[in-house]
Figure 1 (cartoon, rainbow, N blue to C red):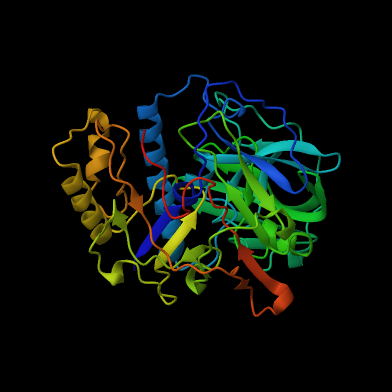
Figure 2 (figure 1 turned 120 degrees about the vertical axis):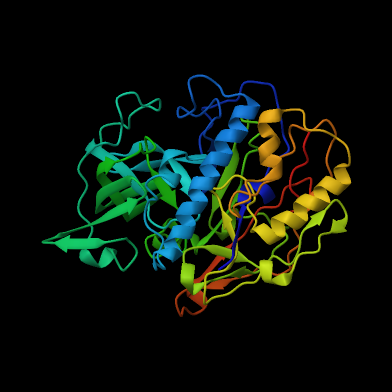
Length: 418
């Protein structure tokens, strides 16, 4: 089985880079939420001691490797449904966060944005193991008890569901981590939009590794995702522009609903793979380094609904990850075009060469003395908006993801290194 994983951060980004102190008190407007990098000065989840650029790269690489192992484990374990939380890879190191108000009265939480998970979840008051004693992020505000979700709310969208009496819950294990949660319902407010009866997970116990202080917002395709639960309001439509990870002083945006979307965008069809039904797939047809197309066998990119193979967009993965065949070809062409230019930072040398295991193959260019050739990821393009049908749905049950195009560069061109 072959799976290519591409971060939306690679394709949707902003070029703005500034030195001023950001205004962290700008309210969300309409149906648009600010997307904040977890290390932004506006994020209370940022480390107390800022990481160096080199240390940040190494940390992101480590997080990406753990997340890829988790995403791959979903199919290895024979599961076709993405769990509410990943225990370790997703919950420990969120990359992008948004503000959401949950409960009655409303409580503002900073929640990780995750396109590869379905349901939202938050740690509840009294959760055992959610906030370790030496946790750097602040603990969540006291959360009032929420009414339990009905049995029908599970609808096959949570791992290991269990229902008793009037309540339903789930248990999740991953690596050395485990969580237990109940499904509850209450109001959620996104920007100025309020949604009643929103179903989400209320984590009661967690063991193994720490969870993010304030939860996760799932944007996948499952029945408990934000998009499915708000389909009448947002027509299962969203787009987002991620802030540059090199410029934490700026925020991006998460736009919900068709009325909030930009008018002029480039699109490529989104594919649905029944083996991983919550994921967003695209048809990658090749890779260029500079202006030269790299000779990669089509089988490296092949979409296969029987095995789950294909190219996935994932908001929780920072770097592009290729299977070994594709990576080796890209690496060799990159080295050829770079010639004799040497790597300045020795600690990043192994990141340029890859680990050789077929799962951690990234090319990072910030430690080079010479500006490298620009990479491009060609996709089939179309001018019309592409709609993704839901489970046997008709015209009113279609789902779409409209990626925002950067205002300066083509949507298929990743940022250049400076």
